[in-house]
Image (cartoon, rainbow, N blue to C red; front, side):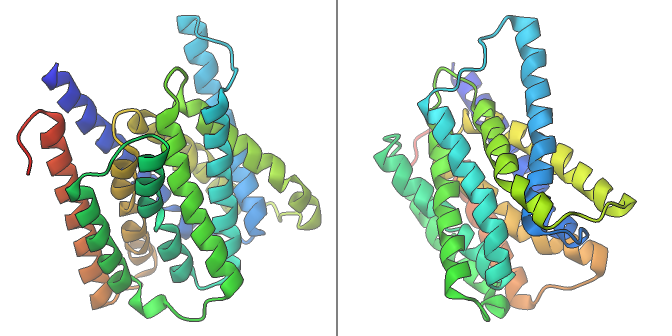
Amino acid sequence: MLFYMKRGNKMGQGAIFLCALLWSTSGLFIKLVDWHPLVIAGSRSFLAALVLLGVRMFRTSRTAGPAFAPAFYTIMAGFAYAATMITFVVANKHTASANAILLQYSAPIWAALLGWVIAKEQPHWEHWGALVCMAGGMLLFFKDGLAGGGFFGDSLAIFSGICFGANSVFMRMIKDGDPADGMLLSHIFTALFSIPFFFIYPPALSADPVLAIVFMGIIQIGVASLLFAYGIKRVTAIQAMLTATIEPVMNPVWVLLVTAERPSFSALVGGGIIIAAVAASSLIGRRRAAGFSVP
């Protein structure tokens, strides 16, 4: 039994890590698409919904699974992640991008608090320690970008972080259903919300932006949503959010590889602190799940 618990926890953290890596490419690809942000959000969510719906239909046909009848927590997870995506995109238009991603990644704090209250998952000392290290690391990481923000954009980014944390908690609360249904609903909600913007800001269709949208929709958030749904059933909400903080660390790495834009020394130090905090918290949590004595 301990072997399967340890294996499940390890695979869950691995799935969240891969999901975060895919999420981290969004900033680069969004820059390559000269469309309105909500048109981009709606387009990629539409494709992601098709991917998730196709996977669900395939599973249902092979296992005679239940019809799509989302329960309360599934619907709440869908609304929470849709709100996360929509508010984060809008926040990027009304504040500095560093402000937006830093404030959104207050999500682990909200996941810890909401998970404690709603899911009764009391954080352990390594989670609180990782949160403190993560906060310090992200201040260093984005020190050069924390300027030029607007109150409206900053407020939206904070709200996006609350929604992101809430989504992870609601996904954990889906006991009898499939967390992937929550992700499916989130993309359906996002696509529906964006429909008016296609008429107000019609996108210019050409090969480069269309290919970028296809990648983002199918791989960057489609496959990532499946990975997140798989991982969240195997790790706590706070551990999922801590592992997902790899996303803002990797964001500038992709930019460096493509544009040769180099992060500052403080960003490198901050990123190292975040990675070390997440790794240490994950290792301690894995030992606890395996039954080893942890202070």
